[in-house]
Amino acid sequence: MVKADFGSDFQWGVSSAAFQTEGAWNIHGKGPSIWDTFTRRKGKIKNGHHADVASDFYHRYQEDIAFVKKLHIPNFRFSVSWPRILPAGIGSPNTKGLDFYDRLVDCCLQHEVDPWVTLYHWDLPQALQDKGGWTNRDVLSWMEEFAALVAGRIRDRVKHWMVLNEPTVFTGAGYFFGVHAPGLTGLRNFFPAAHHAALAMGRVGRLLRSEVPDAAVGSTFSCSGIHPATNRRRDVEAAKRADALINRLFIEPVLGIGYPVMDLKALKGIEKYMQAGDDSLLPFDFDFIGIQNYTREVVRHSYFVPYLKARICSAKSRGARPITDMGWEVYPESIYDMIKKFGAYPNVPKIYVTENGSAFPDTVANGEVADLQRLKYLQSHLAQVLRAKQEGLNVHGYFVWTLTDNFEWAEGYDARFGLVHVDFQTQQRIVKASGKWYGTFLDDQPAT
Image 1 (cartoon, rainbow, N blue to C red):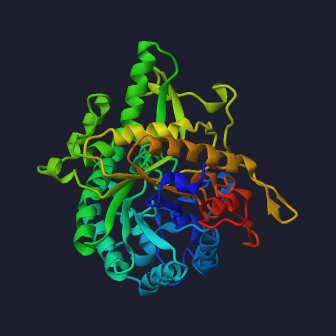
Image 2 (cartoon, one colour; image 1 turned 60 degrees about the horizontal axis):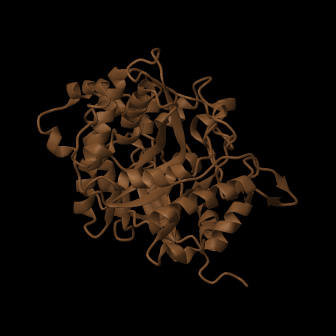
Image 3 (cartoon, helix red, strand yellow; image 1 turned 90 degrees about the vertical axis):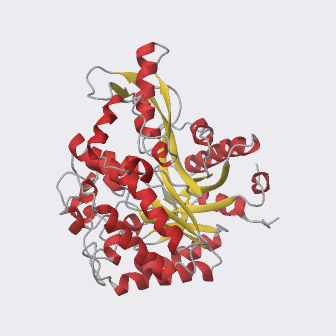
């Protein structure tokens, strides 16, 4: 497997997120986000970690973009911190925040790296959460205001835009299970948050298309292969319900199919929050979609799980496959299955894999990090992407998660996904073996 096997127009990149990397949480006019608040709640983040400094990308972006260039990575995906641009969520913009992203985009271009911008990667301004956050339909106009400001500043240099990052995760983990910010629970929070997130993709997508007419506009969706634990009917039906929630809840409204209520009847509760005309506002003809896959899930029927009547079997119970630090089974075939699944929808646009990667324990020895498990993970998953490509499936790019080790949400700093190792005490960077391999793989003229 070599880069040329994927074709000359295949897009290669690496992805990151503002809150997980930037730090600088309260300087230069930035306001607090829901994650700044959440990390200060006792017991919410492993080891009491917070992202006040993270990997200090705000101050070290030039060093980190130089790594992107050194590794021959042509595309860098990053997100914009909403509270850094609008400390109160709406109203007067923070000029220093806009200036930072101006400099970041220029730095990328100076290194011949194309910037890909994600507008929302989970760091809602706390001031807007105080008004209900994603449960408040006004979030649609709030996000339009934010998107217009960002587009107005950098639209002349950014050609790829993503509206949301993984709406299933931030609405489910943040507004139903309460394990992510803002820490709310229950269907009364999840249903309106989910519906407003679904509407936001089309609404902000239309704004971006008008503000940046030559740009490619997309959004990203988390996904996992869903397999029934047995061939028994109740496990098969449980897997269908889990698939409707995990994989189909947001992509199908965008494509004009509607919410997958037939396979998960509990989703009818969303109808309470739908207004006249919403059916026509949900669909949007994105130029591309990003799918983000890390593993598969094996599902078993459960009487005791409300609404879903299904539970995910732990990866440790499944046999001999390796398990990552996140407790996820290494199952490379899942990324092929997801490309095939999403590509089977009628009229689906281009598909990019906008996140794929793994967390494994890293050891620094003699100034090197021999992360062979991560290297093997990337190679095995890329082989499955190539399989999809060679079968003529609709996949046009692959982005690794992530450039540097960073703050991994509720896992704090224990879960390391980076191609570049970060010592969080000194901020020293070391390119790992996986990063060196990816750089060699992407080099059009590798050393002989």
